[in-house]
Image 1 (cartoon, rainbow, N blue to C red):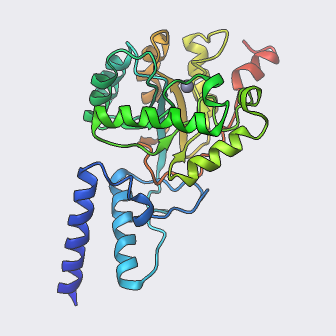
Image 2 (spheres, helix red, strand yellow; image 1 turned 135 degrees about the vertical axis):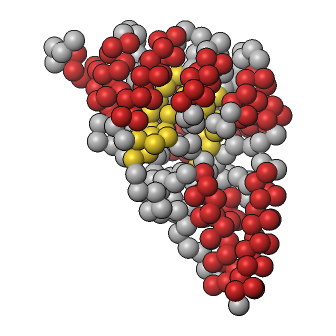
Length: 299
Ligand SMILES: [Zn+2]
C-alpha cells in the first residue's frame, strides 16, 4: 500500500512539476485546485499552495473528491506588497531593494507606452516575484467602456507578458479597484460587476487591496505622511495587501520601500506573493486614512 501511495505521489508530483516548470500550472489550475469563491483569503507560501494542489490531486484520485488544500496551513502574519503600474525607470531600483531584503512582491504591470517592457518583465520573473495583469492600457475610457474592450485590453497584455517571460498570469488587478466609480462614466453603473463576472468566468482571479501607502494621492503625500498611511492602514490586519506604485514619478515610494519592509517585519509579518489560489480580496478597503485625519485637523 505504501509503495502504491509513493508511486502515485511520484507520478502526481512529476506531472505537476512538469506543468509548473512550463509555466502551465496556472492554466490548468481550475482542474487541480478549485478554490471556493471568496473563501476567506486563505494564505500560504508558494510551496504550501503547491503541496495543497498536490494533496488535492491525490485526494481526487484516491477518494474521488476534492479537499480544501490551503485553508489554515499558514498561521503567522502575512503581508503582500503589490506594486502597480510598472514597469518604470524605478523598477531596477525596486528589484534591488527587494533583493537586498530577500522579499518577494507582486507586480501588477501595464503594457502601453512602456520602454524595456520585456527586459524588465524578465528581471521581475527571474528575481522570483509574481506578475499580475493590470491591463495593457490602464485607460479608463477604453477598458471600462465595455466588457469586450476590457477583455481585449487584458488579453493584449497577457500575450505581451507571455512573450516576455514564457509565463501566463491569470491574476488581475483592476485599475482603480473593482469598486471604482470612474468606470460608471464610460460603461454604465453595472460595468464593473459585468467585467468582474466575465473575468472570473474566464478563469482569472482579481485582487484588490486593504492597505495603501497613499503614494498616488493628490496632492502628493510627503514621505512621513506615506509612512503614517502605511502604519494606520495595515494596523491589525492579516493578511495585509499593500498598494504601492512603480512609476517614473514615484521616487518617494522607492525611497521609503526599505522602511516599509522593515516596519512590516518589525510588526511580525512575513512576505508572500499572490498566486492563483488567492481569494477573499475582491473588494477594495478604501481606508482613506490620511484624508479623514487631515479633514479632522490632524496634519
Ligand atoms: Zn494602476
